[in-house]
Image (tube, rainbow, N blue to C red; front, side, top):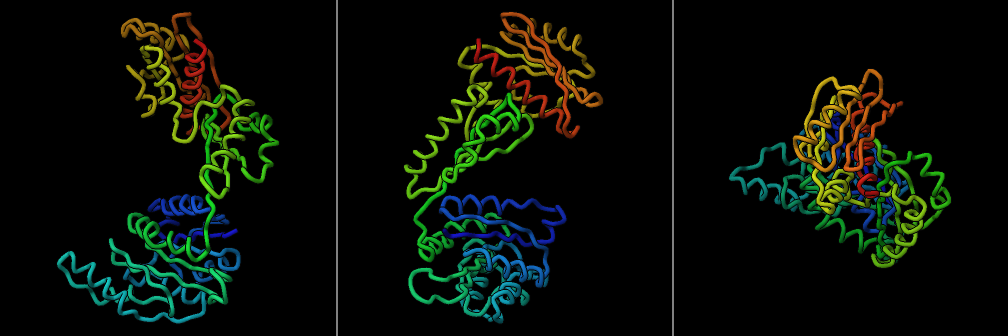
Length: 383
């Protein structure tokens, strides 16, 4: 099976100045091609460390994709690092220089002398056109082909760090190259089921045997008040992958029941709003100590400081009466106590409860909100 590793290059990423979104995009692209991603790493702008990382990645993986470090300044080291990793010198390429000249010319300018650095690539590299930026990209293959399609190839593919440029070149040039060079004829498809109401450990107990499957694979990812169950299938076609996933998904849903509230792009707050719309119910919501844009999406939501359970319930009664709402939900978060009070009023009466939290204090508001939304969801489903 074809394997890959991703190396993002840039000291600004290590310093936390910018967020790396390229890795996620490339990883999803590789997944769609059926390529196994072994690892991803970030390296600062240092030629030796980048060259070492590339060399080690080439020992493990068929494909090494780098992003960043292809600009015109002296701290853009990727070209030299790749050349060092594969044991060649860099060479000036007139065809790549003309790409730079043409791109800058579209802005009515002439390139500066330092921009000639961008036309230097490892000797023998395959040049890739960058139609939306000044940084030409390239592919280096090691060792050379012996015989057959893709036999013995290790490909280092260097792309720009600017996401819009990287994404375009990946789609237009890199994907066709990978499909041809490595004979890629499989896909990896993923289905993510979202759960609330049970912790990760309890969900694991119910589906532990499914987590030992080899294809599809099943894994868990815990978030704040939500747990994801990921089902990933590798197959020759999308329809075959869908069929494999469906069989496992059915087992997960049977075992977890209403704990599963959605899949893939579904979000808990949207599921709740859809249930309200289906029932034709009007919701009013109030909170204390919870400033969250998701909670503000709820109809007629309002915030009050310093509410305890009694005052929360009183405020909720008044809000429900004033808005003529069918159902009312209230949350009062108490960071000092690592706890939250919740109250709900429905046509059937009032319900209250307190939850305590053992995780990071800063996550308490989001955790409380998700638990309250799930409480509302299950109430609506039972009504």
